[in-house]
Length: 87
Image 1 (cartoon, rainbow, N blue to C red):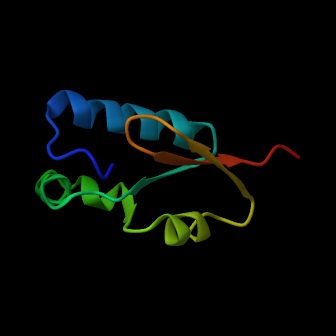
Image 2 (image 1 turned 180 degrees about the horizontal axis):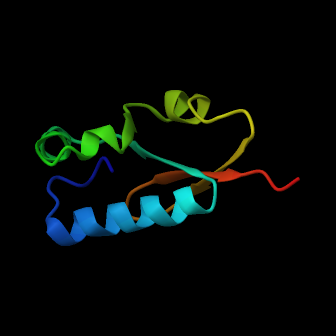
């Protein structure tokens, strides 16, 4: 999320929807490189209690449960999703 300088209600709604989808599938969703303004908005809206944030990719990847597979998706901003291992 390093390139995202601000986010509106629609953007917050999309983040919550993605979090809900990933969580209900047994996965983990964490945010990487959240800017100061977006971080403040997450605090104001109390969504900082929902979204775990990390400043660097290595710590983000290490934060996933050992039973998680980590998939990295390239897009305008990088999003890291932990997907529950299928065993």
